[in-house]
Length: 115
Image 1 (cartoon, helix red, strand yellow):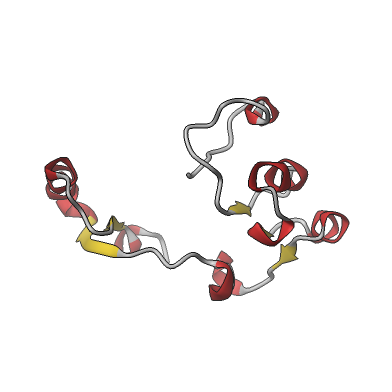
Image 2 (cartoon, rainbow, N blue to C red):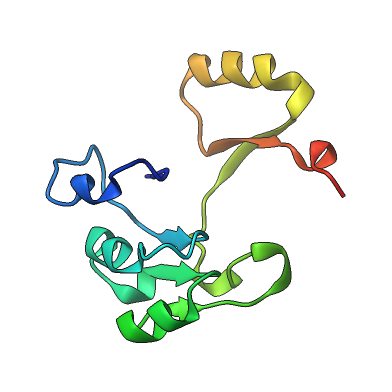
């Protein structure tokens, strides 16, 4: 489950979530580490790239790697069914509606990112 930051994010704790939170990445550094640990249930499932002090306080991993990519050993192994360039987003949507996928559909936005 991917959670996006919404105000107030603390309301999601204790709420019935549609599925479990497997991993959490804090890229804001705005004090969300404690919430992330509570949602995942395990500090080993949380990584921050923005809050080294909070990481130490809550026992989560802090990564200062360039490109804001978490270490590969904490990422889940997710099967990928197909990768689409962003300009083929409509094809990806149609493919998702076909169902019966044996993996995730990925939209590659990298060519559109500023360098």
